[in-house]
Structures are given as C-alpha cells and as structure tokens.
Length: 388
Ligand code: HEM
Image 1 (tube, rainbow, N blue to C red):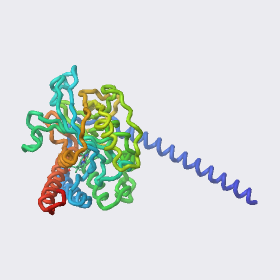
Image 2 (cartoon, protein in one colour):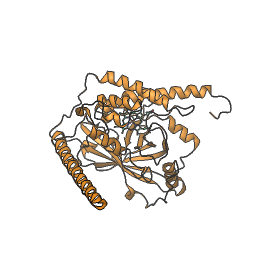
Image 3 (cartoon, rainbow, N blue to C red):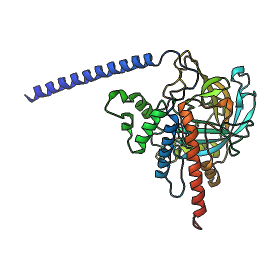
Image 4 (spheres, rainbow, N blue to C red):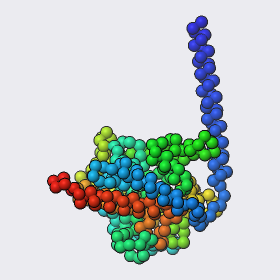
C-alpha cells in the first residue's frame, strides 16, 4: 500500500516537473520571439527628449540626496553610487596609430598622442560592502590637461575628459521615467518589487529585473581583469557610439595573480596592490568604440538594449597602461575620494547622449556638490585630535 502511494507520488511529481519545464520553455521561447520582434528595425540617430524629463530629474535628485544621507559613513558623506574604491591609480592612454578618419575625433584626433589619467576602480553599491558581495564594478577614467571648451562650464574640471563605466553591458532601466519609479521604490526599501509597480502585468519589468540580477555579479579576481562598458551612448564627432575598456594582457608582461583570500573584505584592493605595488607588474587595457548603425535596433534612448556586436563590432582606439606604482596611501585615498567623475566632463566631440546620460548630468553634479560641501563642513567642525 505504502509502496503504491510512493510510486503514485513519484509519477505525480515527474509529471509536474515536466509540465513546469514545458511551460518554462514555451514562456522563454515566446519571450525571445517577442523581443526579437520588438527590438527590430531602424531607430532614430537623434536624441528624443520627453517633456516630463526635467521634473523627473529634480525628483530623482531629491531621492539621491536622501540615499547619500542614509549611507553617511561617520563624518564623511560618500558617493550615492560606487561609494567604495579599490584604489585610484595613475595611467596613460595612448591613441592608436592608423585609426579610420571618422574615429579621429576629440581626444582621439592625434595618432600616438599619450594622455595622463587618473583611474578609479569601485564597487557599485551606495554602501561600502565586502568585495565578495554580488555587485557591479566601476571604472572611471579622467584624462588630464585636455585642451578645449568642455560641456560643463567652470574652471574646476576645465582640463578633464572623463569616461565612466561599469562591468555589465546593459542598464536595468530604459529611460528617466522608469528610473524615477524604480529608484523611488528602491529608496523606500523595495528591491525586487521595484520592478513590479502595480498589479497590471503590463507594467512588470521582468527583462529589466533579469538585467539587474545579472549586473549584481560575483567579483572578478582583480579590478584589472574585467571589461567595463559605457552602456549609455555618446557622440564621437559626427558618430553615435558606445565605448568600453577591455583587459589587454597581450600588451603587458605575462602575469598570474596569486590565489586571493576572497573572505577578506577588500580583496580587490589587495589584488591591485599585489600586482602594481608588490610584484611591480603593469596592467593593460584597450579602449574600444562601437558605432551605431541606425538601420538596426541600436537605440539611443534605451540603455537596457545592447547594441549588436555582430552588426557593429567594437574597434580598439587607444591603449591604457597602468604602470607599476604605489597608490595605497592615506593621502591618495582621500584625494581619490574627493575626485568627481562625470560623463559630462567632456569635449563637445564626446557629448553624452540619451535620457540616462542627460539625467546623469544633473544628478552627478548635485550629489558631488552636496557631498563635497558636507565633507568640507564636517572637516571644519572636526574636533582636535580626530585625525581630520
Ligand atoms: C550608463 C549607466 C551608468 C554608468 C555606467 C555609471 C557608472 C558610474 C561609476 C563608475 C561611478 C563612480 C565614479 C567614480 O569613480 O567616482 C558612478 C557614480 C555615480 N553614479 Fe553612475 N552610472 C550610470 C548611471 C547612473 C544613473 C542613472 C545615476 C542616477 C541618476 C547615477 C548616479 C551616480 C552618482 C550620484 C554617482 C556618484 C557621483 C559623485 O558623487 O561623484 N549613475 N556611476
């Protein structure tokens, strides 16, 4: 009797698994077919700015300042995103010889030209956590002494051309309106629910939830061993492009990082220190660009869509070399904390485009100004002997 019951239960479970697998496969196939249809055909090569964008941007800044305040680290106010640095290092960026004439724009205009740069590696979270926590990893590059008028007026960043990236090719929202809703929900402590704004299944953003989950990935073995993407599009002279920075070990001496103890909270900083400061081995990357082909679905106003590399492959345009160096001093870490990277610290030839980039202009500026102001007053009020 008991045996028959077990057999019956087993058969039932088997059928259930089969039905679930079939439903899953059909759902996945339908999703693939739907997006292949939705993400096909030509797109605009111009920006399209919705009328509500300015008001939404103001609301996002209010939420961002609220998050910064929530994550205050004792006396210092940290960045609202990418708060934890693995190190700020000096690098040089050399423009490749023989670039096609349409790519020779802005800082890429002169073949062989070498720019000095500060490079900050970071974890994406608003709060500094253990490096073993799933997260995005950021790389921000600031070219120095770049002549020419910049998109953001003011002397403070007059000579700077920034490239600001993280190591996933797509963003978890399409545009400013969706960012507003999602960020407001997240600031209220909702995580997954932020992607399900109402009971109406038409408002559910399952594809974007999957992007968010994939973005929060395990750490690479070192900050210099992963690919960093612009995700959002930019001008390159007359072209619309995305850019990325890929590790290029072939340009550097062969090096194998010793096995790290990934239980240590800051093992990514340790990996950088091990390679650059102890073993004195440089790290190499290449800067690459991908041109928009507007005959295909390579949109400017949707950062959740990856541009097809089959249709438009990335091309290398510059070499980035991070020489062996000592970077992990108190002074340099503090200097690094006080740097501001912003995709709008840029020449007209590298203008950021698309809704998410337009939003970043106002938000980065506001959050950076806020934390600098707060940190300056915290320092002024610091009691004697506090070390500040
Ligand atoms: C294409 C998508 C994005 C990428 C690749 C990106 C990447 C980065 C990186 C790497 C940093 C750290 C820069 C540093 O080292 O100082 C950063 C900082 C920051 N990001 Fe983003 N981000 C993106 C979108 C956004 C959006 C949509 C917002 C909010 C509207 C945002 C808000 C911020 C803020 C407030 C900071 C700190 C700025 C500061 O205090 O200096 N980011 N981002």
